[in-house]
Amino acid sequence: MHPAHDTVPDGNELPRLAERVLTASLARGERRGVRFDYTRPSPTKYPWQWYWDSCFAAIAWRRFDTERPRRELETLLAVMRDDGFIGHVVFWDRPISLRRLIYYNVSSRGAQMTGTIQPPLLAWAWRIGVGDPRDEPRIATHHRWLADNRDLEGDGLLWLVQPDESGLDSSPKFDPVWGHRSHANWGFPLLVASNRRLGWDARRIRDRGRPVLCEVMTNVLWGLARLANGEPSLTGALIDRLWDERRGLFLDEVQPGGARPAISTWAALSPLALPDLPEEIGRRLIEEHLLDPARYWLPVPPSSVSAQEPSFEPNRGPGWKLRYWRGPTWVNAAWMLWLGLVRLGYHEQARTMASKLEATVLREGLREYYDPYTGEGLAAFDFAWTALILEMSDPDLEAARTSYL
Image 1 (cartoon, rainbow, N blue to C red):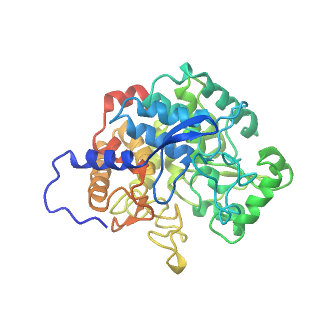
Image 2 (cartoon, rainbow, N blue to C red; image 1 turned 180 degrees about the horizontal axis):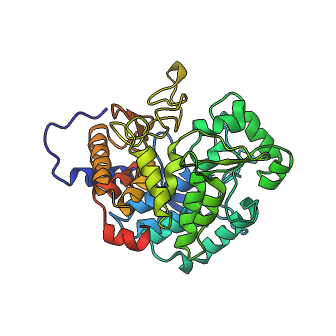
Image 3 (cartoon, helix red, strand yellow; image 1 turned 30 degrees about the horizontal axis):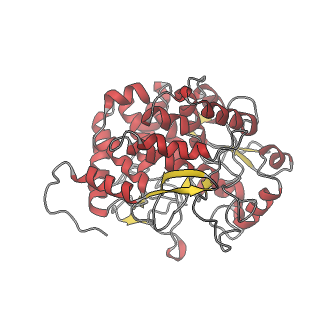
């Protein structure tokens, strides 16, 4: 834990901290004749290139180096297959260990990247950090792969074959879907092995009667990427399929069967990031859920799971085990919800969220996530995308309006 501050910050302390962490996280080199230049999510814990981490890092980097976002995202594009597929994790500098092999979605230990995806926000990050993604034809190829292989119902929405494809690995909302095969449970390697045999092909997996999931937050980021790339909005399809009018939340859909796990997590509120979300829906998400101090508006908001859920774990779970996305506050999630607060005119609440998170990050450092009651920094140190705190504490609203508000 970093020592508490006894003096008022000078206004430059947070940017200096963010730039130091981002700079120390850079990884540069060459593998198989291809140059790489990316930001490790956390140098000591996550050494490889994670898809959505790099996208968030590119957004944060634009404040310090105008060329870095392009290099970051072009490193992802450099590993793209000819058909447009980009994996969840790219192993640039060294292969995974034998111990990790049963947990990672790779066809072999020598695979350059996983056979699974992560939330595909590359075009949105490109729009914010680089320019018009339509000027980069590889992004259109990537989008075609996603539409051809993961839009199972023809409405534009993507389906996932594992919980970790969402980036929300151990969220309790996946417990009813995958049961003992959920992430961080004893059966997760069995899920990996089963999907490996089927080539992580979503249609084959569904047709074998195994779960595939239309997950809210993944489709929010996919919708933002499509808008950034000049493609039609998915917001109407997201509402038609996943909006639950009675509960006032967006809930995932499982196939086969059509189950709708009714567990309230921040992902159920994540459509607030969509610029064309109808105002009446946005206000329900904010007023009935986000700003409720018994649910998400805890001392360091927003928690990643409603505090009213039985599965809510604000710090550590059974056996003092850290499990991702089961209660603590994450800065990237906070930023996506902050976008909705600003867009719908909840400026005081947006400033409150930003100031509480800023004080927490200054005190604890750029950690992976934080206890929503005490602000204690948890899990990885020097976590790159936590630099997104600057998007809330020092927003460039004029630029935001042209890029993502």
